[in-house]
Length: 505
Image 1 (cartoon, helix red, strand yellow):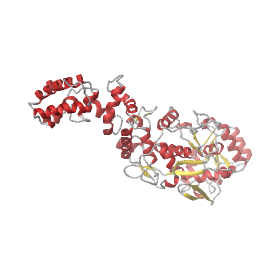
Image 2: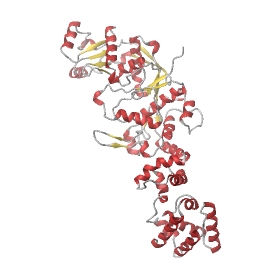
Image 3: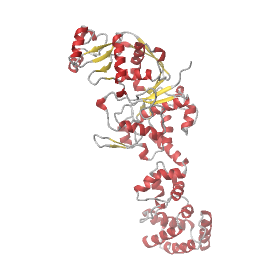
Image 4: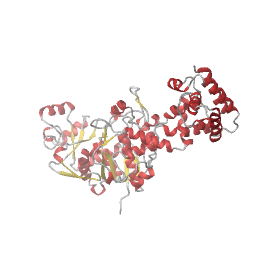
C-alpha cells in the first residue's frame, strides 16, 4: 500500500521567519498539494532559553499572508497533536526511557567545566566511543551511583550511544545516496534533566514518526544531522516508517560568498522577512516584504525559482502552476544566489497584471499615510490602473499617481525652464476656455477638440501639451494627458491651470 504524503514545517519561535525558512515551507506546501497530501505546522519550542514572545504568531501570520495553509497545527488542531513540542514532554520522556532500557543511550553527569577541560586536554575532542569511557556517565558508574545522583537532584543529560566505524547511508531525493562514517558523529545529547525537555534531534524523530511524516523537506544545513536521525530510527526499530529525506540548496548572498543573512538585506536594501518585525527586546524594526509593497504571489513565484526550475522557459507561475510543475529532480544541489533584483522584477510584472480594484484596496494604506482619507474607490482604481505599469512596488503607485489626489503646489524646475515661456500664460488662458466648452470629457473626444484648436491657432503642439501637463501634474510625467483629464473632474483641471498661470514665473 502506497504511503500517504505527509510533510511538516517545523520552525522554532526564536524570532521572525527568515526567507530561507519561508522557501522551505513553500516547497513543503507545493509538494503536499501536488500529491494530495497533508501539510503540518509543528512548533519546535524545546529550547526555552531562545524563545521570543510573539514569534509563533508571527510565523503563522507570515505564512498565511503568503498563501500557505496547513491541514494540521497549533491553530488547526488534528489527531496527532499537540503540535507544540513543549506540550509533549511526557511523550519524549517515554521514548528517552525506551532508548535507555535498550542500551541505545546513556546518562551523563559531566559539568560544563569538565567538558571544557576535556576539550583542552584532548585535541579535537568529541564525546564518542573513544572518549565516553573517560567521562562521568552511566557507562563508567554503577547503577546504584547513577540512581543516587539522580535522587540527589544532580543534573544530567541523556546521550545517544553511537557505534564506531559504521557507514551510515542517507537517501536524499536531491543528492542521491550520501554516506557518512559514524566516527565523525558525537554522542549527541537527546534529553536534559534541567528543563525536562528533549533536544531537537530526539523530538524531531519522535514527532516525525508519531505524526506519520512521509517526507522531511528541510534546508541543506540539516544534512549533517541526517545520519544521526537515520541511526535513531534504527535504534527505535522504525526503519519501515523512516521518511524520505530532501535537503534543499542554501540561499546564498547576492554579492560575495556565503549564506544569505539579514545583514545582506540591510546593506543592499531588501527584506529577508515576509512581514515587518519589531524585536521585543531591542525595539529594532526589520522591514518585511508585505510592508515594502510586494505582492504575495510575486514572492511565491520568486522564491520557488531559487534552487528549482520547471525544466522549460516558464518564469511567471501561479501557485497552481507551481503545484503542477514542481519536481525535486529539477532542484539544484548547489546553493542559489538570492537575486533580489529579480524579485523586484517579478513584483513589477504581477503589479501590472493585478486587477485595478484589488490594487486600489492594497493602495489604501499608502493613501492614508499621505492624508487621503475615504477616497472614491472607483477613482482610485482607475488612477492606479493608469500608472501600475510604471511601478515596481505598491508605494511606487503614489510616486506615479500622487497628482490624481493632490494638486501640485510647486513645479519641476527643469520642465518650467524648457516648457514655460512668456507666451504660455495667454495660451493656457485660451485652453481654459476650450476646456470649459467641452461637455464630453472622454479622452478621445477631448483630445480631438484640443488638438484641432492647437492646429487651428498654429501653436506648437509639443509646447502647448507639455505646458498643459506641467500645469495639471506639476511635471512633465504621467500617463496620456487626456486619460488624466477624463478621470479628473474638469473644474479641478481648470483650477490647476489657473494656479499654474498665477504661480509660474
